[in-house]
Amino acid sequence: MKPILLSLALLVCAGQASAGDVQVAVAANFTEPAKAIAAAFQKKTGHTVTQSFGPSGGFYSQIQHGAPFEVFLSADAERPTRLEAEGLGVKGTRFVYAFGTLVLWSAKPGFVDNQGAVLKGRYDHLAIADPAAAPYGVAAVETLKKLGLYDQVAPKIVKGTSIAQAYSFVSTGSAELGFVALSQVINEKGGSRWVVPKTYYTPVDQQAILLKPGVKDPAAKAYLDFLRSPPAIAIIKSYGYEVK
Amino acid sequence: MTGLGDAIIVTINLAAVTTVCLVVLATPLAWWLSRGHGLVRDVVTAVVALPVVLPPTVLGFYLLVAMGPNSPLMVVLQPFGVRTLNFTFAGLVIGSILYSLPFAVQPIRNAFEAIGALPFEVAATLRASPWDAFWSVALPQARKGFLTAALLVFAHTVGEFGVVLMIGGAIPGKTEVVSIRIFQLVEQLNFAGAHWLAGGLLVFAFVVLLALLVIERRIGRAVRD
Image: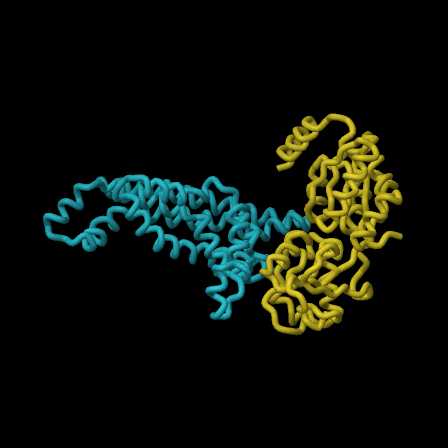
């Protein structure tokens, strides 16, 4: 498999060798703010941004196998830390760009109460992101365990490959409710929600890191600088994340 | 590695149920298609062949919507306490039936067509009703087609991924199949586990294809003799 992936990676590199383009792997929960940030970045610097959206676990695995991403916006701290240790990420470029917030959400108005008591009630399916690949899935499982409901609720859990699929399960109504990222529903007027207290789960400290393929690309460095600048932070906060 | 057995059992169950349903459903369809030509039959043939060329995501997307609680199809089932067929084994069976339909219809249709008109004319002169001729002439003569269809559908369903990914929800013991499990193992960087399952599927697929070739030769000879 490795040579195939490698040659594919080379092909992609060759196709986009033009200067001033940054290839960014973005954790699914950060999709909307990342698009807004890319637009602002492009406007300010003239560099373009090519973004891929998916589960952090999936990206980590791809990066290990030669994916050509220059910057990785993970949904956790663990994967960027590991990439740095493995030499696939550039030392000293890692930082927390956002703290994520978990929300229990339903497309049905009045379904989710502001205590999460609905979890004990009647429903068929509770959507979460796959905890093996997505930190928001881990946070969801921690919350259920904290509430002492995990064993009771486990048979009703449906797993999306990323937080984006979990959200789509809930928004189509196929799952009555689900744990999603606040950023996904912040601009959603309808439905009902419970913002899970931060004490219920380990903080989702989302880290960014510069990857080896981007080490010589000034656009990649510029992107990371921009991500830390006040205009980007304003965008990030507007989607319900905390920035410290 | 927990739940590996569950995933294998769900996969085999899904493939077996799909195979039985599809052979039953595909037989009358293949029979009708083999009994003539015309625009209507061409249109139906093209529709049946669609899953071969469509990305599984297209099928998965339509199924996700069609089997969701807001779909008119589901409104019919709601009085019976069924809110959605997504994330259920029944939903996966429906998805698999659509996904593997061409692999059942095509071999059976070919087998029916290969019989030709003569045996049926003979049956008619022996005063066999068309119904009788279908059971005592068409089905036995087309047995190779049925065997091929069953094997292909079973193997194709075991190899299904995209549709299940979109409508399954990966519920252990219910909708989590082997191909999904491999995907998860890779995302978890459990390459040892992924190797075992992927290798197993590889051997399985090879054995099925080899069996198809052997059956084709044996039955082909038996029919000629």
